[in-house]
Image (cartoon, rainbow, N blue to C red; front, side, top):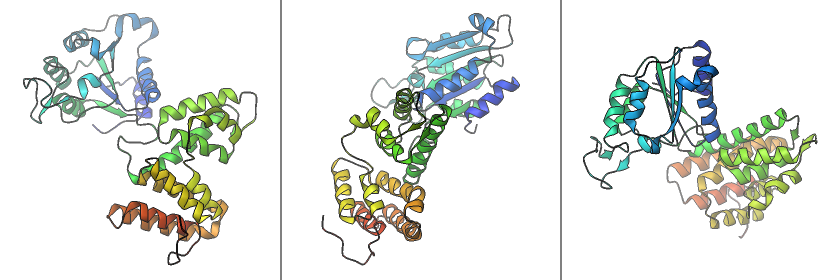
Length: 343
């Protein structure tokens, strides 16, 4: 089945047409909780004592889940079982770490052990009057159980700002855009505005980690209660001490047109272990979001420079560090044929 969204699940609940199987997977814990809670609400509150169960996979026998799922709802139309920490059953173990008896055809052992067969058989023929919800941090699509779930279940992926499990180079700038929109939306809900400059330290601290960003925003809104606007000073007061290096030093220098400082910040970023594609993503976000206001005349050439660098990095067109050095110099307004300032 194709991947579903939170809105898809809400529509299932509203229409009363729940599927027998759901898998909620991802690293956004709050997002997964929201989906699971929406599903739980489909069971009337006065019936939850009879028709709702929440269990933890590491502490539960898979056969017990199947037996419960095969039980007809009591005084209601639907029974629901939410299995948390289901990665215990869905990720599998690598070949060679245990006995070979539970290995599937792809060389991956089923984490549920002997109980995996029971689960696979249930997934292939689920009880229509029961909804089983698996909530997991991740899943291994090569195991028999997950293969069966992919065919039969509604899969809801909650990867936060990333949108998918593996963040590619082109997705970094999009993730930062989502982060900025998320912060602005949360501030608006609290009747606050946020200064554009205040976004930088927030994104610097959280990066593409939605859990970190949610925590930072929650503390920030509490700190700014009673105010009308969130400033950069407010953000630094809440999260500023948690970082040692200014991840936005490169873009700040580029915005001022200081090539030497931009190269220095780029060197510091590499020395601190920064990923080249992350740096490129930040520069792409800067060119699209801030440069049009700071220096509209530089936008066209900047977009072209970012595009050329992206193509070169993907096609092994040069050492990533050298390509990024050339890019920041060009973004600072120095012609590509001109001599670079010394480091």
